[in-house]
Length: 148
Ligand SMILES: [Cu+2]
Image (cartoon, rainbow, N blue to C red; front, side, top):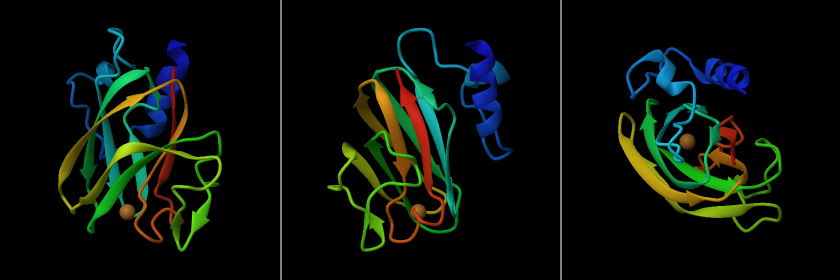
Protein backbone atom coordinates (compact mmCIF):
# COMPACT_ATOMS: atom_id res chain seq x y z
CA UNK A 1 0.00 0.00 0.00
CA UNK A 2 2.57 2.52 1.10
CA UNK A 3 4.93 1.43 -1.62
CA UNK A 4 2.33 2.04 -4.32
CA UNK A 5 1.48 5.46 -2.93
CA UNK A 6 5.12 6.44 -3.04
CA UNK A 7 5.35 5.23 -6.62
CA UNK A 8 2.34 7.31 -7.62
CA UNK A 9 3.74 10.36 -5.87
CA UNK A 10 7.06 9.93 -7.60
CA UNK A 11 5.34 9.69 -10.96
CA UNK A 12 3.57 13.01 -10.51
CA UNK A 13 6.27 14.81 -8.58
CA UNK A 14 7.81 16.96 -11.26
CA UNK A 15 9.97 19.91 -10.45
CA UNK A 16 7.14 22.39 -10.84
CA UNK A 17 5.06 20.71 -8.18
CA UNK A 18 5.66 21.97 -4.70
CA UNK A 19 4.03 20.42 -1.71
CA UNK A 20 1.72 22.88 -0.03
CA UNK A 21 1.55 20.92 3.19
CA UNK A 22 5.22 21.38 3.90
CA UNK A 23 7.54 18.45 4.25
CA UNK A 24 8.22 15.95 1.53
CA UNK A 25 6.24 13.15 3.05
CA UNK A 26 2.92 14.96 3.40
CA UNK A 27 2.19 14.88 -0.32
CA UNK A 28 2.93 11.22 -0.77
CA UNK A 29 -0.26 10.00 0.79
CA UNK A 30 -3.81 11.02 1.39
CA UNK A 31 -4.48 12.30 4.85
CA UNK A 32 -5.58 9.66 7.29
CA UNK A 33 -8.46 11.73 8.64
CA UNK A 34 -11.01 10.46 6.13
CA UNK A 35 -10.50 13.32 3.74
CA UNK A 36 -8.15 13.93 0.87
CA UNK A 37 -7.41 17.44 2.04
CA UNK A 38 -6.26 19.77 -0.70
CA UNK A 39 -5.36 18.20 -4.00
CA UNK A 40 -3.03 20.43 -5.98
CA UNK A 41 -3.59 20.41 -9.73
CA UNK A 42 -0.91 21.86 -11.99
CA UNK A 43 -1.79 22.79 -15.56
CA UNK A 44 0.51 23.57 -18.49
CA UNK A 45 0.36 23.43 -22.25
CA UNK A 46 -0.52 20.63 -22.52
CA UNK A 47 -0.67 18.60 -19.36
CA UNK A 48 -2.57 18.22 -16.10
CA UNK A 49 -0.94 16.79 -12.99
CA UNK A 50 -2.51 15.96 -9.62
CA UNK A 51 -0.55 15.91 -6.38
CA UNK A 52 -2.34 12.65 -5.56
CA UNK A 53 -4.17 10.28 -7.87
CA UNK A 54 -5.71 8.16 -5.12
CA UNK A 55 -8.32 10.18 -3.25
CA UNK A 56 -10.83 9.43 -0.53
CA UNK A 57 -14.56 9.61 -1.15
CA UNK A 58 -16.38 12.64 0.20
CA UNK A 59 -15.62 16.35 -0.10
CA UNK A 60 -12.50 17.05 -2.16
CA UNK A 61 -10.85 20.45 -2.41
CA UNK A 62 -8.86 21.05 -5.59
CA UNK A 63 -6.40 23.93 -5.85
CA UNK A 64 -5.71 24.43 -9.55
CA UNK A 65 -2.60 26.33 -10.60
CA UNK A 66 -2.28 27.40 -14.18
CA UNK A 67 1.46 27.54 -14.75
CA UNK A 68 1.06 27.77 -18.50
CA UNK A 69 0.87 30.76 -20.78
CA UNK A 70 -2.81 30.66 -21.77
CA UNK A 71 -6.18 30.08 -20.05
CA UNK A 72 -7.13 26.54 -19.08
CA UNK A 73 -10.04 24.72 -17.44
CA UNK A 74 -10.60 21.86 -15.07
CA UNK A 75 -13.47 19.51 -15.85
CA UNK A 76 -13.97 16.22 -14.02
CA UNK A 77 -15.67 13.11 -15.33
CA UNK A 78 -16.52 9.89 -13.56
CA UNK A 79 -15.75 7.20 -16.12
CA UNK A 80 -14.21 3.81 -16.58
CA UNK A 81 -12.87 4.86 -19.98
CA UNK A 82 -9.17 5.52 -20.39
CA UNK A 83 -8.09 9.14 -19.90
CA UNK A 84 -7.28 9.49 -23.60
CA UNK A 85 -10.39 7.69 -24.84
CA UNK A 86 -13.32 9.90 -23.78
CA UNK A 87 -16.11 10.59 -26.31
CA UNK A 88 -15.46 13.71 -28.37
CA UNK A 89 -17.51 16.12 -30.44
CA UNK A 90 -16.43 19.29 -32.26
CA UNK A 91 -12.92 19.24 -30.84
CA UNK A 92 -13.92 18.89 -27.21
CA UNK A 93 -14.92 16.05 -24.91
CA UNK A 94 -18.64 15.44 -25.24
CA UNK A 95 -19.98 16.06 -21.75
CA UNK A 96 -23.19 14.21 -22.64
CA UNK A 97 -21.32 11.40 -24.38
CA UNK A 98 -21.80 7.80 -23.41
CA UNK A 99 -19.58 6.41 -20.72
CA UNK A 100 -18.89 9.71 -18.98
CA UNK A 101 -20.66 11.38 -16.08
CA UNK A 102 -19.69 15.02 -15.69
CA UNK A 103 -19.05 16.24 -12.17
CA UNK A 104 -20.36 19.72 -11.37
CA UNK A 105 -19.27 22.36 -10.98
CA UNK A 106 -16.28 22.85 -13.25
CA UNK A 107 -13.60 25.55 -13.37
CA UNK A 108 -13.51 27.75 -16.47
CA UNK A 109 -11.13 30.49 -17.52
CA UNK A 110 -8.24 29.88 -15.22
CA UNK A 111 -5.94 32.56 -16.59
CA UNK A 112 -2.21 32.07 -17.01
CA UNK A 113 -0.54 32.33 -13.62
CA UNK A 114 -3.78 32.15 -11.65
CA UNK A 115 -4.92 29.65 -9.05
CA UNK A 116 -8.59 28.74 -8.64
CA UNK A 117 -10.21 26.32 -6.24
CA UNK A 118 -12.96 23.77 -6.76
CA UNK A 119 -14.93 21.88 -4.13
CA UNK A 120 -16.80 18.75 -5.16
CA UNK A 121 -18.28 15.66 -3.57
CA UNK A 122 -16.81 12.51 -5.06
CA UNK A 123 -18.10 8.96 -4.74
CA UNK A 124 -15.86 5.91 -5.14
CA UNK A 125 -14.84 5.13 -8.70
CA UNK A 126 -12.55 6.02 -11.57
CA UNK A 127 -12.25 9.60 -12.79
CA UNK A 128 -10.56 11.65 -15.48
CA UNK A 129 -9.62 15.33 -15.12
CA UNK A 130 -9.31 17.33 -18.32
CA UNK A 131 -9.10 20.81 -19.80
CA UNK A 132 -11.97 21.12 -22.25
CA UNK A 133 -10.86 24.14 -24.25
CA UNK A 134 -11.03 23.06 -27.90
CA UNK A 135 -7.98 21.02 -28.83
CA UNK A 136 -6.40 20.93 -25.38
CA UNK A 137 -7.72 17.50 -24.45
CA UNK A 138 -6.33 16.01 -27.65
CA UNK A 139 -2.97 17.65 -27.00
CA UNK A 140 -2.64 15.86 -23.69
CA UNK A 141 -4.58 17.77 -21.04
CA UNK A 142 -6.07 14.74 -19.33
CA UNK A 143 -5.16 12.62 -16.34
CA UNK A 144 -6.82 9.75 -14.48
CA UNK A 145 -7.40 9.39 -10.76
CA UNK A 146 -9.33 7.08 -8.47
CA UNK A 147 -11.56 7.65 -5.46
CA UNK A 148 -12.10 4.96 -2.86
CU1 LIG B 1 -6.23 23.94 -21.58
